[in-house]
Every structure is written in C-alpha cells, then in structure tokens.
Image (cartoon, rainbow, N blue to C red; front, side, top):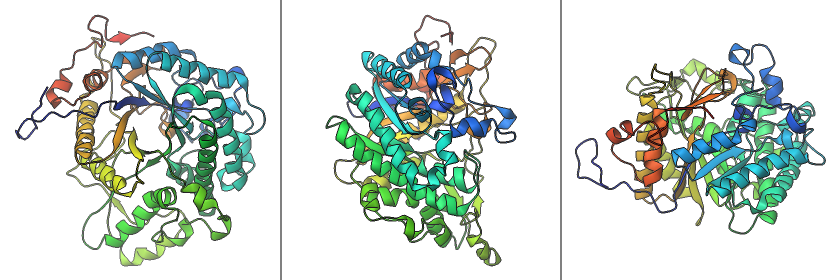
Length: 486
C-alpha cells in the first residue's frame, strides 16, 4: 500500500523493516497493584504516595490497574491491538522485599508466568529491571546516594536474570536515570522526595554504576544474543531568542549528556555546572569502564523538546543555587501541548534519533522505549473513547521514526507509552496516557480510538495516511462491543 504525504508530495510506501517490534510499555508500580500480595515488600513509592501532599488527590498505587490479578485479560488486549512486544518492569520489592537477601519465590513465579504467557503468544518480553520502585529499607539506609545500593542492585539483577534467562527477552537495566536522580533526590517531586543537590549528584553516579554492574551480571547469565541495554529520557534542547547558546549547552549537559556520555563514552560532561557533577571522590577506579561497557540496544524515551532562553545577567548567580535550572524555560506558542503541558514536536524525535545514531558503537541498535501523550479522555454515550489528539500525536511521531529509519538510523522497535491508563506518579490518576481506558472504580477496560489506529500500523508494519488512522474501525475485532470487560 502507498500513502500520500500531507503536503501532496509523491506517494511513498512508509514501510518499517521486517521484524520491527511494535510494543506498548508499562511499569510495575503504575499498573500492578497488589502491594501486599505474595510477600511483596514496601517500595519508596508506597511510602511516598501515602505521604500527605505528595500525590494529587492522595492517590496511591495500592490497586492501580490491578494488573497483578488481571494479566490474562490485559495480555489479550495486547494481542487484540496486534502488538508483538511488551515492555514491563520487575518490582524489586516483589523479588527482594528488603532489598537484599534470598529471593521471594512467589514474586519470581509471577514474572515467570508472565513471560511464559507472552512467549506462548509470540510476544517478545522487554524487561526493565528498575522503574523507580526501590525497596524502602534500602532508601532508609541511604538509597541511591549510597554506593552500596548499586551493589545490591547487581545482586538483584543476577537473581532475576537467573530466573528468566531463557525467556528470549530484551533486557533494560534501568529506566530514566535522570528522573531517578533529579526528581527523586534534587527537586523531590518523585520518590523518595529528597531535595539535596549533593544527594542527587551522588545518586547520579550510583544509578549509572548500578547499570554497569547489572550489565556485567546479565552478560554472564543471559544467552548470547539477548539484547541488553538501558532506557534514557532525552529532551532536545532548543534556543529561544538571541544569546541562548550557553544556556542550551549547559542545559543539554545536565539533562541529557550527564547520562548519555557516561554510558556511551565513559565520562561526565564538562559543560555541566560543578555542583551537578558527581564528586570525584565517589568515582572509583574501574567505575567508568563498567558504566560504558558496550550495550546492544539504547532505549530512547522521548516526549518533548525543551526550549530555553538566555538568563538575565543578574540571574547568572542563581546558576549555582541548589536545584536551580541552568536557564529559563519557555513554551513557544506555535507548538501544541499535551494535557500535561508538554510541547508536541515530532521533529524532536527525528533529530534525537539521528544524533544518537551517530554516537552508537557499531552493532548497537536504538529502540523508542517510551513515546506517548496524556489527553483529556472520556467515554462517549456509545461506550467509545475518541482520543483523536493521541492519534495525531502517534501519527506524527511514527512518521518521524520512519523518516529516521529511511535516513539510516538503526531503529528496531517502538513502544507506545502506555498500554493502560495507570497511576501516573505524582499526578495520580488524573493524567491518562493509555491506548486502553481504565475505569479505576470498576477496572473495566475500554480500547480507545488510538488502540485501533496503532493496530492498523502494527499489523501492516506500515504507516498509512493520517486519515486512515482516524478511520480505523472500532471495535478492534470487528464484532465485539468497543467496551472490553476483561
């Protein structure tokens, strides 16, 4: 099938490479619920969400989407959407309730059953070992600001790899180290809610060290050929107005290069302000070699660009203030925004994929491990969720991904965030990112318009015209009602 560009250009077939992975992404605390089931311990997000004032409306992940008890139905949704990959995370406190010691077999059994179900349906598991739910006892002992936590993480990685090594998975050590260190330890908007630059700088190094140590353990256990990597969130930094070059350079160093440079090149960026960099005394011999050991796949989490202005002359002194950004952010009026207020710029995905591809070692692939948008979703009287904003967002970013592949980027997969509406961290249940609407009071699932649009792409391995995505038929299977009670 051929499609025509919106501007009326010559028709082109926007096909993706054979074997391309079409997936959806989730994380344990955001969907599983069952926080006291089968020996699971307490995580830092359990503690944080139960602390008054930390999460909108006092929401918690205690039940979330109840995925722990509804696996079969939710995997049926994956199949209905036509996806061939599923990204999920392991809840560390389900495996080691106290962050160390012998594993909890019931936790391992849950994930063993999950990967077995996926493989039986021909769906590739993409396993993230850490998506922000550290066992609370480790935080009580110092958390990521303490080097010992990286050592404990390596032991945890070895346990999980030993239990699931044969499942044919893609392995990601960590999700978004920038969020772990900056939002968790510097500005305090995520668990554990610390607000200390020194703790955040230490956490930056120890989180990346945990990646390197876990990578080493995984390499020793999983079969040769099993892709192993890390997912990093990247925001292309754009100048707004004159004289913003230094602001761009410093902001890019602190938001992006602080995590990319150690993993890809083995050093921290010199352009970052000194108080943001890990202190040299924390970096032991061999650390950077571990952190920069070759990976098979780099996961890119892309949502939006950041635009920055040059700070006023008198404001430059505030650059050294704890928690202060490198430069004032701005929101150009010509760009649309999601309901989160995040700028929508598909070209940012294209540009980021191109720039990352130029840095990768030979043989290393790229995957978009998260991309999606929050929208003001609601159920119509007919029982549908007509999330056309999300369909537009999806179209624009898939078109950007296709252009990147056309231009030589080794992109092997795309994972939409998220499969389900879920517990969206400090925003609680207000923000909806899912392809599937969740009524949290009844746990009813309703496949949205975007699920049908994504199915049209995934099942054909090709991006049709935007209008075709909007016209993709509901319900998914052509016969059942759009409201899917599973």
